[in-house]
Every structure is written in C-alpha cells, then in structure tokens.
Image (cartoon, rainbow, N blue to C red; front, top):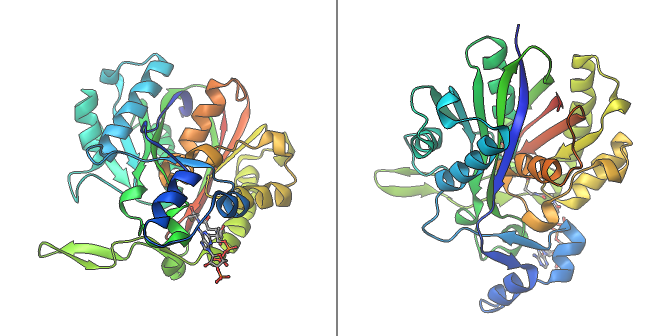
Length: 324
Ligand code: ACO
C-alpha cells in the first residue's frame, strides 16, 4: 500500500497589508473603537493581508499551488488530484478546485472542494491521503484558500479584526515510505451556531445573514479542549510517542488559543509554529501557510515529525501527523 508524502509546499498572500493601526483608523471613521493594544493582547494579531476586490480565491489558490509545485519540482501535468479547502469559493459552482485546475493547465484528474471552514486543510489533506493510500491518485495538490475579508461584517469589531486573506498548498506524492502516519477528523454539528455565516443565495437574493458570526468564548474553550484530545488521539492511532513530535503546526486563529494548547500538551514554545501575528486567521489557508513558512525558513526539515491541527466552524476539528 502506498503512503502519501508531502514533497513541496507554497503560499501566497495578497500584497495589501493592513496593520492593526490602519484597521483602527478605518473603523474610527465609522465611530467603531478598537486599538492595536486590544487586538495584540487578546489575539496576538499585528497585521493581516487583504485581497483587492478583483482577486478571487481561485487566483490566490493557483499562486500558492504554483509555488508548491515549483518547490516540489513537479509539473502541473503530473497532478491527478486537486482538493481545495475553502469556505469562500469563487462561485456556488463549479468548484474552486476546477477553476484552479484550469488556471494551472492541469486538466484530466479529479478536482473538488472541501468545506470544513478552519479545519478545511486537515480535512482535505486527510482525504488526499486516503486517495493515495487507496491507489486512486499519485500526485495530489491540497490547497487551503480564503478571502474571509468578504464575509466579515466590518462594523462588528469583535470579528472583523481577527481574519485575513491568503492561500497555502502542499504537493502530496505516492511513496514507499511514510509520509503521513495518521489522520483523525471530527465534527459536532450541534455546535454549528457558535461560528457561522448562516446565509445563502436563493432566487437571486441573499437569504439569511451572509456575515460571519461568532461566540468567541465558546469557540475558545471548544478549540483548546478538542485540539488537545485530537493530538493524543492521532499519535495513538499512528503508534507514535507524543513526545517525539518535532513541530506543532496548529490552526492560526489566536495566539492565546495556541499558547493554551501548547501548555496543555506540554509542548515547548520553540516547537510551535506561529504565523497568526503576521497573517491573522486565514481559515483553511492558515495551516498550509504556517507549514510553508516554517519549511522555507529551515525550521521544519526533512525527517521531522509534524503535527498539523485544524479547528473551526461546523464545529469541526482534526489532526494529521506527518513525517516530512
Ligand atoms: N476592540 C476593542 N474592544 C473590543 C473588540 C475590539 N476589536 N472586540 C470586542 N471588544 C470588547 C467587547 O465589546 C467587550 O467590551 P465590554 O466588556 O464593554 O462589553 C470586551 O472587549 C470583551 O469582549 P469579549 O468578547 O468578552 O472579549 P474576549 O476576551 O472573549 O476576546 C476574542 C474576544 C479575542 C474573540 C476571544 O473570545 C477569543 O479569542 N476567542 C476565540 C475565537 C477566535 O479566535 N476565533 C477565530 C475564528 S474561530 C477559529 O478559527 C477556530
């Protein structure tokens, strides 16, 4: 049975950077008060990248995918599976993955989207791993890409300061040696209302509330407990001693959630990859972007044991354990 191995990664962030001070100044024009101090103390976020109006999720995803393919030394024509994790697709249909396939010039293989909000990348990675293990794909692109800036209520200071836009991608290849050692996914639909954008389009109109809404404290508690449990679960499944993990790459929602998780797991801070300060929460893009940053700056090396974790709307969560 083949294993799936990450052989390349890439990221793309739209060029426009909005600092906390920029954002506070913009909100002040609408009599909404916030500050760099509040945002940094509560979240660790210092800035976010925001896509210009003409830039779509598929374009961000394609740029990240191109960087990942180049990093892997793989031609787009070799890709026989593309999975895009996104909650902000270009269209109702076709899927963003099909648009990415076209933009890459990689037609012929399977292409579809996965919708698991901020857990989307680990859901997509686990799915691609299963395809490769089953012999149904050889070379997969797994992408997380979002333009969350478009579903934020910019008059709601409790959510609009938290998110940014971007895309991250990995190339998975069928190999004799692992690779991905374990993956475990979960959902609890009874908690769907603590983090949602509960609107849709019907008869040409928006029905319901198209903006992201969140019960921040409920999300905080559930995120820490579910990720801590999930970390041990995936290590047990893979028969790996938890203390052997070299790097934790968690969903980048909030530095306080990440620090709580690290302390609960007993993982030292220097083994945890943090990018939320620079990128804010990019939902499904956050884990592959963080992974790519740490691979490119030389922290994550070949042979390292990496635990990737996602958590978010649904409520969904999950972990993927991978030997790099
Ligand atoms: N600037 C200034 N003040 C603010 C802001 C802001 N941007 N947002 C809220 N406040 C105020 C509130 O109005 C409130 O004021 P009050 O006391 O006068 O009523 C006060 O700050 C405290 O508000 P809380 O919501 O209680 O703040 P809390 O300490 O819980 O922090 C936060 C909010 C940062 C959202 C926190 O709950 C949290 O970290 N939650 C985790 C959720 C998260 O990170 N979600 C990301 C998406 S989910 C995911 O990716 C898994």
